[in-house]
Length: 42
Length: 236
Image 1: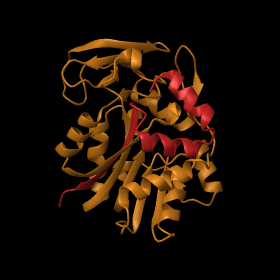
Image 2: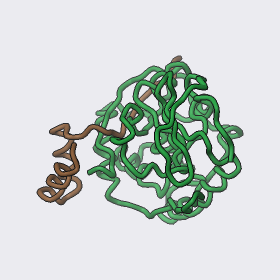
Image 3: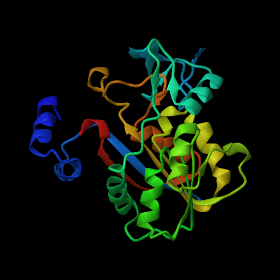
Image 4: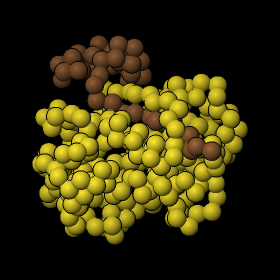
């Protein structure tokens, strides 16, 4: 997502939670936090 | 200060300059692509920095921050993504729990059915979490005797001098079939000009990718249950 797009999204959706929901729905991001759920083998 | 010659993931000694910041150099391993600081503070300096939340470089900086309640709804969303209705744990340890936002989210999500404990080296964060009534202290993982159904470590990986060694040490705190929730950035494959800045060196010591972290976990005997990705917090 370019800097300009990021700023536009921020301007149109100022609320953080709403912005997060929008970005997740549209997958408008490249650099990500990953949450890995792993299980220790028995 | 110490010089790191080998990549902790693949042990290759071949790497190329990637970026520099605050007097520290980030290099990219030629073999596996891991980004790591190759002129990092020594282990004692890192321990002290984490306890006080203050890191030294050309410019010193503090990382203690403050309690952020806005994180909790985000964590609840993530817990739902990760577990759906499949959360049967009774005990949970959150390593690097900070001010305790994730502990609060786990307690809320589980309707207080889970006994959640936190550990954090930063004395200011410990006090902040304790003031909210959370069970938070700091203990040495190597000598700790308890075991847990789930261990989480959010935004811890990049701060560790040697993540595989640390993750190996966690295995004795888990039962067979216990789970690990590990959060870190998936950024090692980006070109230097595209990587988010600042890197916060030397608080962060390495940046990995999904492939690298999955490889490490599988080598240590973990099976991947699921991986969920979200925008980097600073970028939204």
